[in-house]
Length: 143
Image 1 (cartoon, rainbow, N blue to C red):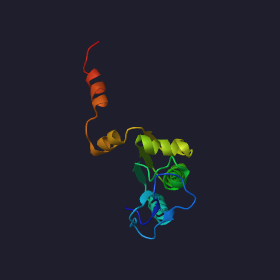
Image 2: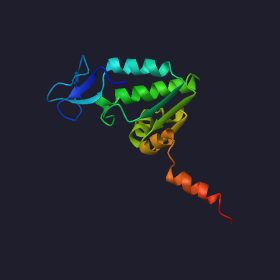
Image 3: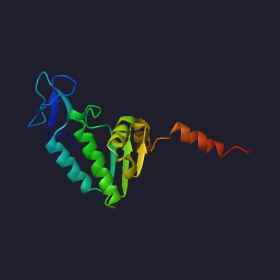
Image 4: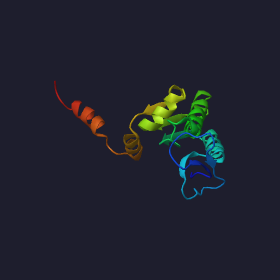
């Protein structure tokens, strides 16, 4: 799913009046710093209709409160879905996404949080992870 709208500003700093686009187009001179309200609702709808969700990568610059709403909303929806038994599997992969979920208090409400986004995606892809491979090798050693 791609964003329908964005929260924008001319620089990556807090503002009381960010530009919220009506479409996915980001005007010249602006940066997309978070997903917009229509996108949040779209993503929440898809999460609420899903059985499994993998989230890898924050929705915006969540470290700045002006641009935290998207990431915090996704974390909350995943936490709510998990706690209500609607999501059988909810995974947050990646240090930044994990940090966002922790900052808003929802990391502990999902099934699994990984600090390594790339490793999470590799595992889902079926690739062998070096650390797991090394542990498997230990099973073949006689002590």
